[in-house]
Length: 127
Image (tube, rainbow, N blue to C red; front, top):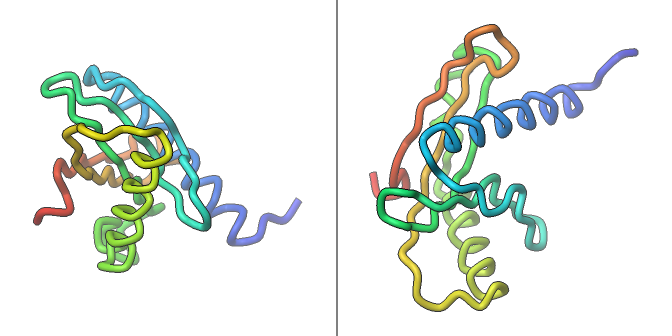
């Protein structure tokens, strides 16, 4: 079976999200929701940080290799704006009025390799 580029990208993305969720769980985070969709936008992971009870909206970015640059570079202004808007809609839809939130990014290089490299960018949108 021949896989088109979109299918393989989606599979890489799914694997990266699975790795990111396991990474967060291993650090005590509670995964509240995955792949929250609103309209055409999506937040990959919504979690609770055990240290400070922050609701954390996590965007996962991955690459098979660094050939096309670090996955963090895919966090454009437009993508940041979209994630913030979806987070607002999530809070509105769930009727959550007073909660401390932050936006993290987890990058995954080589999600299908034996030793994928994960980096957790805490409060990533404030850099």
